[in-house]
Length: 195
Image 1: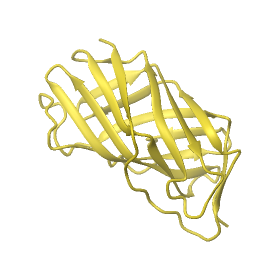
Image 2 (image 1 turned 30 degrees about the vertical axis):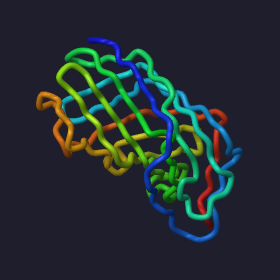
Image 3 (image 1 turned 60 degrees about the vertical axis):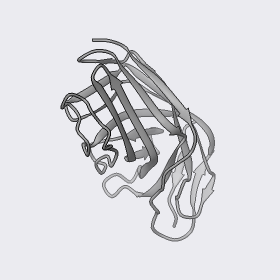
Image 4 (image 1 turned 30 degrees about the horizontal axis):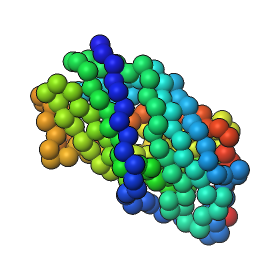
């Protein structure tokens, strides 16, 4: 088992999905936030990385007409990361990624379905180089103030390993790449969908 380092590049990219309904999305108190998570896992194919904790930063708009690019998310720190098969480096960029507000969750009225677009995930180690781009899905829970990235109740990740991926058969081009964590946001946000 060995440590995993994080390299983050700055920039903006990606597209987003729209919300349904009329009116506007509102977020309170909005503005800048920090999110801290415990166990954070990333991977694809048979490759799995696990970090003891991670942190994100970003900002949210107070009002947005359709939920498109209503916020930003920047992965900023990963600690206590381990993986099987040698040392791996994570790269995440260009960042920040875009946070898109989609709809009220059909099963839990405290949660808002979200997507995170413009995502680029990279994992590299001995004999292994993986880069994927696409969209992650998650939920924001108004009752707990937590952003859940990659919960089992959300659509599957659409971040796919690119054509240049080579990882000794552990990850192949076209494989879905995962990112799973539960971030507690500070300050706690309240997100209200359009009426």
